[in-house]
Length: 352
Image 1 (cartoon, rainbow, N blue to C red):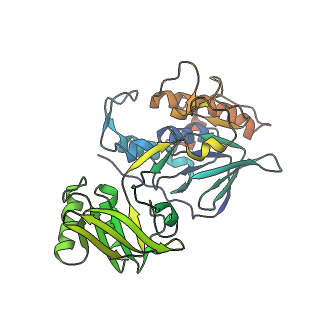
Image 2 (image 1 turned 180 degrees about the vertical axis):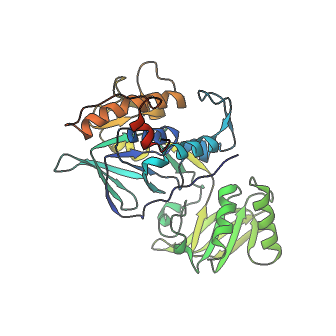
Image 3 (image 1 turned 120 degrees about the vertical axis):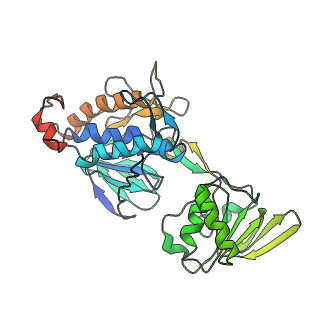
């Protein structure tokens, strides 16, 4: 059964220093923390999702995985939880719910990663473990929606307090839409849920809670689709909702559409790295990119014979960590050790 471990994210907008920044907190990024931690290297992970696990946790948390060595079957969430337990001794830092949008060299020859939430992380090496790229929201086909994005249209919730005492409209019928409806309802002045069908694609318990709240008059549910937005200067005033019987108008402050996620390379494409069909070419000795000090492991990299398997990413993380140690600790000798035989490594893992 899933332990559902969830590490605490660092405050948005802070400035941090570490040995290695890992962009992507999926299984390969998490295992990279383990390999780097064995070499006494500190890690700070950045991920656009609000929790670790990447595709495994977001797209198929209950889907069985059969090709992890030594584990006949494991779900995506169980694998994530096991990895988080494995790397717990290394006390990695996390910036979750943030997208890495810029990468640049500092005057003192370090790397600085900046996020869309104003966070800045300085490190000696950067590891890109972003899977197929970053998760991007699927936008509804509503005219002029771009004019309101970031001001009164939001595709994710990063700070719940922002929606306190607001008139909210949440659109969607999946787990995210219903989960955020239940979470934001106590804060909102009013909340309306809009879905194109009366049935939902979400956990039965959440559906039951939503129906009970609607029956009690605590919130409104409309079967239909948002068809038009009205407002000025990025601030919504009201929306039009197309239903089977006509059109409904609701005054709102914020619209939160939850129609799922899609994978795109995103800002990584602007990092100045050589690309091959939207993938990052690397060597197979160090898994370093065309830019020294920048590495790519997992599904986002490319090399002859590449297989997009989690186990391949684990292998790449192990080799990558050897070269990253040389960059971060140039004056120290790299000693290769086995966890089964090294008392030093066993102490780091807390098993001795």
